[in-house]
Image (cartoon, rainbow, N blue to C red; front, side, top):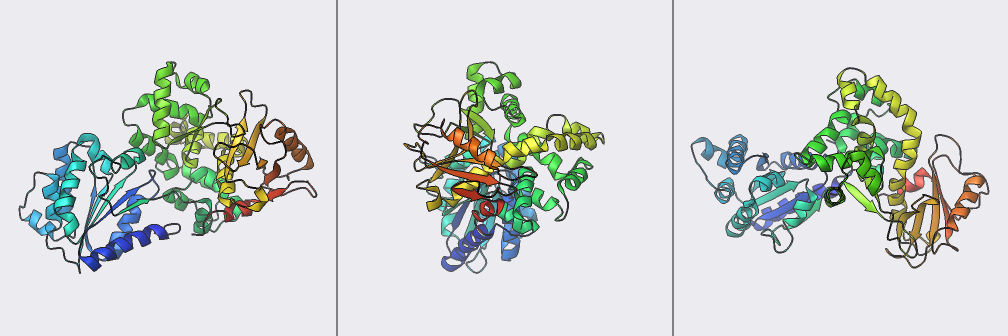
Length: 473
């Protein structure tokens, strides 16, 4: 496995294990992050490289008894000293007893590493699991040479389980969030120029497996043609896996998400497309999507701050691409060998999709450049729009989250060919006049293809500038 973009996480895990070896006492690592960002593989590679005895338990979405039985089976197959005891008939009827047995014969020289992957699945079927882990930790594990690692993809639940007054509040010795790969990570992993990295990121996002599934020298068309020739390719199936894991029984929220993924952004349009006409039901579904971190709710950013015209957007670039193109019948086309139809639609709509999909990524990149005197006193970046979308401004920067004045406005031109022109500049000046608090703000241009000479912008940003905003892997 290439650990591009994962040095911090690896170092954290190594430090925690070193602390166990040094002090002979337990350490407890709490790992969260979006689905498919490589949390499980990261930890699997870490434990294998550590040369320590370990058990890696993949929690099922099953009853308490099934969960314990699966853990017993994982122990039998593990490298822990407890494996022999279980094979010889050692039994346990509770999670505290199971975890206690897992530490048998562990020493500071050779600690026991216990990994529980997808802990939220256990909690869904057995709300008493956190109390069981608390008991095992407080009474036994923290006093033994053990590294306990709990992993979860449900960000809302993982956060709630360690917040006061939850049972596990204050127990983890280290909390770690595994982020998706950044565009710069993707560029380093695949040896890409900045333009190619951003365009590829709009398809595979920051998901490591998808990033590695794209051959370094393959064009967009070549990669998609190959992916759509195989119904089991990660590009085709990962979106379904994410939705199945996030919404095993929440069909209404899933339908709302699909409407947003198709491109609907407003409350009324989402309700119309999803078929969720009831105001309360739609609000509940949208709030659930936002709480899960799958969808972001945005308001116009200006001075004074916008309070209306909320818009919704899918956060993850891959899921945004998958919902827009693959989900609406594309999977079925691939299954029956007609991936060519899906590819033709993507090629037809790619310029329009890319122009919109790149905007959140550009905003994130520009915000990472701040503070920077070129942008005045700006610290935050958003966009501005009205109910009629006249005007709709790509970039608005200001010093506060609820700005009193606007530091800059900007325009993004992510064209296949063509530069940011004087005409684009004039349009931006006109738009600035409609943004509250922006009368004297600076003018920023972002262009995929360069800039016309003497265009008159205060700041010109290229794909290379945006890529450099992200930390080096």
